[in-house]
Image (cartoon, rainbow, N blue to C red; front, side, top):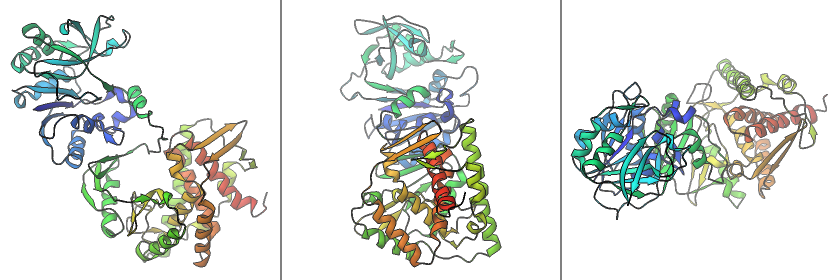
Length: 520
């Protein structure tokens, strides 16, 4: 059986997501929408995919997520101008569909088993309110058969909405009808083909269980059904499909840099199977995140492992390293704080955090010993070294989700940055954030941060601090940099975690600079 999936449109109803990714690739429950659709059909089925807007992304993703499936791609030239629409996109696929086939939009997920449904013309339907009906192709049904169509018109309760899929058995009749390019809301719809089916043959209506993801509000509703906090970054997505991990980034250079970085030390990163412009994928590592360890001595083993396998020194001229650290620590921090202020135009840092008074943000930034931070120690680094990015099993460690570069350089970074990232992930258990086990309350210019109690936290911090001292490294510098990493993370995350990061980071730096030094 052939299934035609239309994924050509620009996704203008998906808000900011539509500007960066083909809407069929938006993740739901760790898989792209199109993967959910594909998994609704048999392994032996073939797929005809209509492509237009960011079509290369769909090809990249499907080649990684479903390499064993059969796909025929059809490029739709007019996917956004007058006369475009699902009807035109489907017509472009006609040469591959001169046989019975399924038609599927790319913005829904089916929850109905299709195996035992009839092999005659039938259409999936659902009940919607009259107010919602204007967004749908609405069908008049009598005795289980479609007898009329009102496309994109407000319809009363006598009508049901076309959900998905449409099974076309009498394909010649359907194509004859679809050639009628009468426009509805300036688009070529498929309703003319549907009309011809029930006029020249019969079209059975079947109630289908489904999830509609046709616009931003609906996508957010389905996405929010998870109890987890949305920890994702605005320009990145992650998928887990068929025992591989797929990462998406809007930044093509980041993809190429991560691939290059993984090749420098292929023994500590997952093996990358494939990469493209916006996607790369790697093999799934059978292990657990380090936040779930129950033996603190594993952390001691890990620190020794990092010394031997990750933190290899690199010869970089002092002046060059100083300039790079200045750009990375100072310039990037100022930019990120400005991004945060653009996000919250009237934002003011709380005057106290968890009962402790803190200085104004500008005062905190002014007192940071920046010149000391610029004297970095060049070595190969991970760049986002927290327990959530460390996988472990009985035999080995594996590091995932490395930072693409440090101030533009893949081959090296500052050792202190990795140490600060590791320390920051001990102060805040990021897995608890993902699990939504945190609270941030702000009122009357005060902030209260409640984090889930992590039994091993204090013991792990002591092991880490003892390690730092034993290596003659500057612990205060690491604490200050940890606070700076929180400030830099803040604009990249969602509320209220973003404000928690800004408040906690400011307090951490404030405590090191003012409180411990007893300065005003």
